[in-house]
Image (cartoon, rainbow, N blue to C red; front, side, top):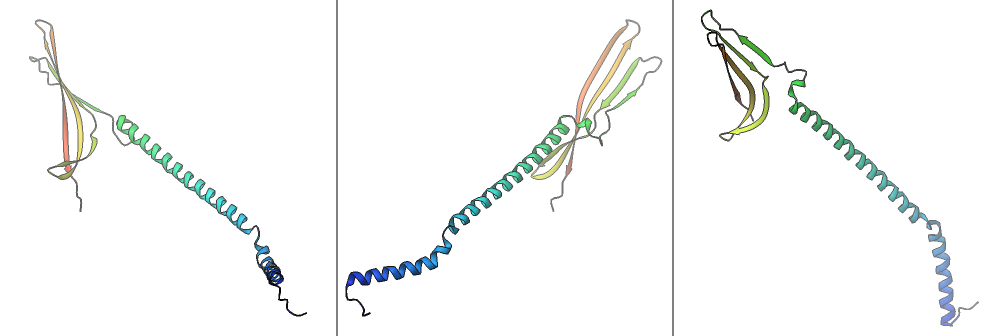
Length: 160
């Protein structure tokens, strides 16, 4: 058959050839983009769940640690390594002097880090209550003097 000189017939032949070629090349790939996109979304959801789970686990750990630290700070005597408050009563009473003196103090508490003259220090505190009782047998009068005080210890911290 001789080649057609009609421009419309040449266009239709070219269209048919292109349709056949593109169908052979592209039809096997139809639907693959949708599947790949769905798989991509599923991977993103899994990563979002993993990240969210990790964040929740970290937050729970922080809450537990915060609770333990704050409960220890609010009630430091519940710490297993801390001794109970010590009470020492010294009887300095002589036969002619009816005086009783006693002192009680708490354990040493760590008040954390601070700065003194731009140098880091750790501060420790101990509360002390001194009590002196006087008794006058002649008038049967009793006098009690209670003196609270605090001892603060500053210990330098090496930052090297």
